[in-house]
Image (cartoon, rainbow, N blue to C red; front, side):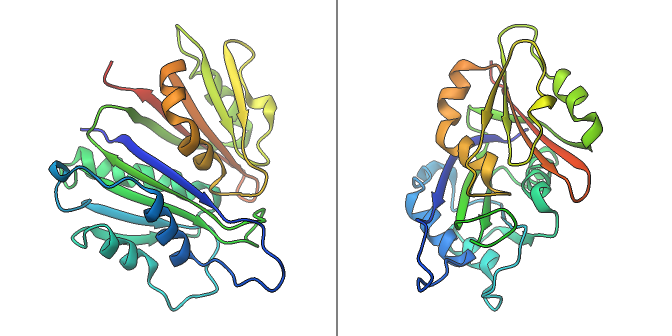
Length: 237
C-alpha cells in the first residue's frame, strides 16, 4: 500500500516580544495535537510510526519530544527524531513512512515537522502535523532529491497530460524552475523555512485535491545544492 494524507494541521506562533518565553518543540507538538481532529476509533489504538522532524536543534535539549509525541498519539508506535537534513528532512520522513507502508510494517504514520523561532530563515515558531494512512486522499506518489541545476527539468517532467500542475515553492526556491506551460505557482509564508511548504499544504490540501491532478511541493537547500520534491496525486481515481 501507499500512504495517503489523512489530515494535516499547522500552527504558527504570533510574533513575540523580546521578553516572551520561547516556543519549544514540545510546545509545538502539544499545540498541533490540540488542533488535530481525533482519529476514528476504527483506525486502531494509534499510529505504527511516529517521526519528529526538525532542521535546527531545540534549545530545550533535555526533552525527548519524539517519545512525547508517541505517548500523546497512542504510545505503541516506533518513534524517532530526524534531523540534520535541512529543508530535506520532511521529504526523507515521507519516504520512510511510505516504505514502512509498502513493506507491511505499518499502515499509519504521524509526522510532526517543527521549527523554533530563530532557526535559519524562521522568524516565528511553527509546525505541521501530518497523519498518513490508507484512507482515500492525496497519495505520496513520489519524493525525490535532485541537484539544483536539474530542478527545472524534474519539475517539467511532472506536468500532467490533462489539467494543470500546482508547484508550491519554498523560501529561496528560484521561480524560474517552474515549467512554462500549464503550471500554477504558490509561494509560502516568509516567516518559516523547513515547515513552509507543509504549512501551505495543511491549509489548502482539500481544495488542491479538487483542482489539480498533480501537486508538487518543492524546497531548495542552497547549502547542499539540492532540490527536494514531493509529488502528491489522488491515487484512488
